[in-house]
Length: 239
Image 1: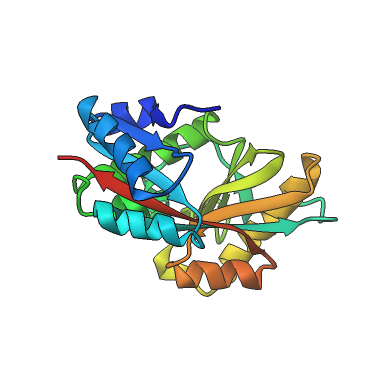
Image 2: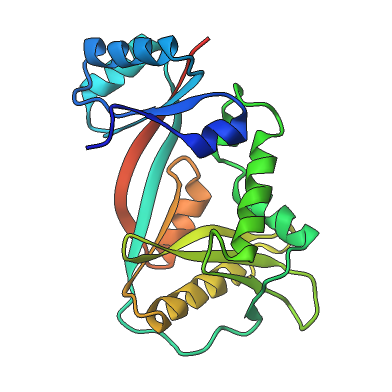
């Protein structure tokens, strides 16, 4: 089993202060407060805590601790029994990082907990998504990055990054430029993800977003996704 207090090396290095995840065996105030006290003694500044939304005891404990409900994380999934063998018109792979891709990546994260939690420094969210798209294009964080162009050589109007997680094809980033939304570009990128899912030998496509991002949730449901999992993520800030 993982430790109840798990140091997160990447997050700590990225944010510049110690960060850990707490995984209590129980969610009562006493158990969780003991872990928070241990974390404080070890110099941690931020704790992540994922809970079941139906756990009333966890909700009460979070309120007692003054924890911030930073994310209502929803995972959508779709079975892909068959798909076309070609990418939709205008969609193509890319391995080039451009300023437009960086802009699209930031648009993808506009409701990220790293953007909505005011305890983070103002530039944390932008830096995080810049790294995300850069590592995706380089192939270290994604298996493939696909973009949509209205015509050959035109600037990217949308992007989708695809990887593999727990036996599923996983959409990491999906964004359509705010100037051209409502033109079925997002649907074409999801169809491209469906095609890649089958071409790579998988039968399930998934994507994670925020339940509070109503527009994104409705879009995924229109595309045929259904909710597979919902979890609450709290931020416990230690002064």
